[in-house]
Structures are given as structure tokens and as C-alpha cells.
Length: 234
Length: 346
Image: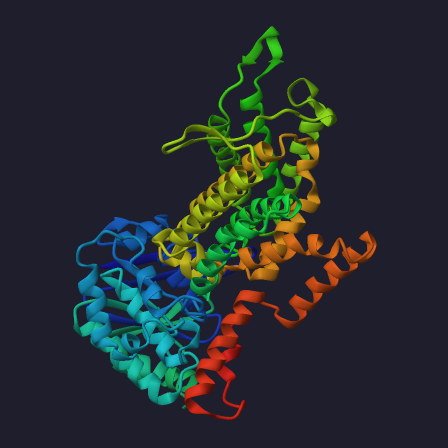
């Protein structure tokens, strides 16, 4: 579904990606793991068009989308759930969800989609008129996921969905992401919580300073001695 | 909170002239209303997109000049020996042209400045206002320069049952300004809760997230600047046809400062904020005039501003919002004042 080859990218003088190549098959959950500054987030930002690639290509279903830009990528079915500040704090939960459907304002199926998301996340339904900034961290992350789904994506890019959440919420979050994959949506997941990500994913890529240094099935990487030593605490 | 304040203010202001017959006070209310309209238009940009237009007076002044010149007619020599002659037209046509021309100016400024945003937009708008002021001062053929455009006709409205009515009295102009303020308020209210409004607020609250959702930042901000400029232009047109004389002083920087003060003190990003701020800072000088010397008036004016921003950094309307939320929470629980932490939300 998504195929990246020899992608170079950087901010000013700094090179963030130095020739990344990876593949995400349809219906798969693929994880990118690695330390801080390995280029995981930059890879996602380049795919969704927020950052421009210096060279290399990104193909979606065989179509070159390297310079498509965020709007076009979203229209092609790629939703990005960025890290850090995940919601619009001074907007209601309902308005935040509406932002996810920004590019399809007249879609007849919109109502059904709201209902489905409120069904999946009852907490959001309870708080639909509350400002998103007053939600707890876990609720904000659920809102961010719900918002990403509002664009009816075929591929969702999750950037550090577990960052800053309590351990029991993290578990819940990974269950939700697994369920999204099981429902047929392709997922590309960036995660620092390497163990959880490797357990959940179909395939994984290990990134180090802008390069892919290992690839394989999640279970393989968990058993890899180098990965164990460097990322899983021995 | 805006839902309570705005209708309440409307009722009070609509009934006010029934017992307030003093023409001086009525005049003060009209001018205050016009500047409140400007503050509402500035709030659309500053409050809902976070972009500060420090040359907002330019749109106000251009609106005033376009409307006045349309009503008065003019002839100017253009390059290549061409002469442009415009016959005097209806003030209503002037109003429409003022809105259109200022909208175009807002669009161009937006296109120019919003690729980079932030400080650049502030600089571009200040420069624009200064350039326009110098043009108004020096293009004497067109604007009469410092001699001012005089004898501008009053606004004409086709009223149902009365036909074309010239709005000569203060009472008529008062209701004209009040009506325009209502229209402006409703337009802004409709706008900010629409899909477009969500895009504006989204860009302000979390730009990179908004971009990732497919929002085109340059286009959204440019549309906001266009609408904001058009509203300020409408206010300028009302000003010209009410005062019936305008000179290049309509481009004074201090007018922009007044608008910013009205928006920030009232509460930027709220619908009622510019109304509350506009009324307070529009009428404060009037209230102070009979009781103290001019110098003292300005000291008090500044003191009130500092006090408001010190006690209510988000502005008056958000502070009232927090207060009512706190009261509502405290009453059913009958709890000590300790249980109010949620009131601190901005």
C-alpha cells in the first residue's frame, strides 16, 4: 500500500532521514521503533506532507505522492495523528471531531461516523460539549484517534500515541490501535515504547540516526539480541 | 456568557434614546458604536486567528474615503493625460463600494503577509496604514489633503413605507449604527461557529495539527483578513456619512490602538468581548470629561486599562465566564471556596 524508497529529508543543515526505505502492506500494522532523534516522527511528517522530502520517493498504491502536500494526502486516505499537543484545547470535543472531517463537510455519511466514534469511545460522547483542553491525557488521545478516523482513512499514521499516558491507559491505547487494524485500516505506528509496539505489530523497522538498521517481523525483533540490549533493557 | 451579554446590551441600547435626549451623549454613543464595530472586525483576526493587524485603521480610513468620494464625486488627472471624472453618487452606493474596496485591500494584504505570518503581518499592516495616510495627505487633487473632504451627504436608506430617507438626526444615525453593529455581531457569530471558523480557531490553537487535517493556512487567514477589512470599511463609511467631514486623521495610529484596547480588555476571541470593551473604552472619556482635567483623564484611562488586564488577563468577558462557572459549581455542592480549581481554565 505504502512504499518508501531511499527517502532523504532534513531541517536546515541537519539531515534527519538519510535514505529510509520501507513498505507497509494493506491491512498491516507496521511499527517504527528507535531512540529519540532516530527520524521516526520525521518519516511520518514527510509521508503526510508536513515536511518536504529532499530526495527519494513515497508511493501510495503505486502513485507517486512524494510532494502531494497534507491536503492531497488526506484526500487520498492518509490520516496523521501527530505527537505532543494532540487536540485543539479551546474547542469542544464535537468541534475537534468535526475538524477531522474538514475535507468532507458535505458527506452524507458524516452523521453515522460521529455516531460510530461516540459508540467506540463513550467517554467522548459524555463530554462532547466540553472543551478538549479540560479532558485527561488519555481522553485527549482517544479524541485524537477519533478525529483521525473521522477522515475515513485507509492508512493512519500514529505518532507516539502512548506518550505521557498512565500505564493502564497505554495498554488500552494499544488495544484500540490493534482494533483499528483488525477493522481493516492500515496502520503505521511510531512508538518509543518498543516492547509494546513490537508485540502488537506485524512488521517493524528499527531506525537509528536517520537510517533503517533492522527490519523484520515484530516477534523476530523482540528476540534479536542487539534490539534487546539497546531498546528493551536487556 | 456572550449569549447573555449581547442580547442584554441590545435591549438596553435599543431603548436608551427613549429617555436619553442629550445630543452630546447620543453623539458619543454613535462614535463609540462605530469604533465597537471596528473592534469586532479586529477581533475576527486577533481573537480568532491570533494575527495582530496594527494597521487596522487603514481599512477604516479607506472605507471612509471611498464612501465619501463616491457620494461627493471627484475628478483627478491620471498619468498619460487621462482624466477620471466621477459624478456624485448615492451614499448607499458609497457604502457598498467602501465594503468592496476594503475587502480587496484586506485580501491583498493577506496574500502578501500570510505566507510568513506573525510579526511580518504586524509590520506589513503598520506600513500599509502609514502609506495610505501619506497618500490621503498628499494626493490633494483627490482627497483635498489636510483641507479635508467636507459637506459629505448623510447616509440614505430606502426604508419600508417611508421611501428614500436621509438620515439627518442623531437618533436616526444612532439606530443605523446599532443596526450595523447587530449585523456585524451576527456575521461574526455565524462565521466563527462554521466550518471556516473552526479552521481559523484551529490554526490559532495548534497550527501544525490544523495543517495535518488539510486546512490551507494561507487561504483561511486571507479570507479572515478580507472579511475583517470589509467590516472595518463599513464602519469607516458610517463614520464619514455621520460626521460629514473627514481628513487624513482618520488614519491615526491611535485609532488602531483604541481598537486593540477594546478587543483585548473586553476579551479577544469572545463574541461579546469587543462589545464590552468598546462600550467601556468608548464611553470612559465621556464619563471622565466633566469631572477632571484632560491630563488626568488619560491617566485614569490608562489606569483602568492596567487594572483590567492585571485583574483579568484574559479580558472582562472570559473573567465573567470563569466567575459564573465558579458560582454554578459552588452552589449545588455548598462547598468551601477551595473546590473551584476548574474556574481557572482560560
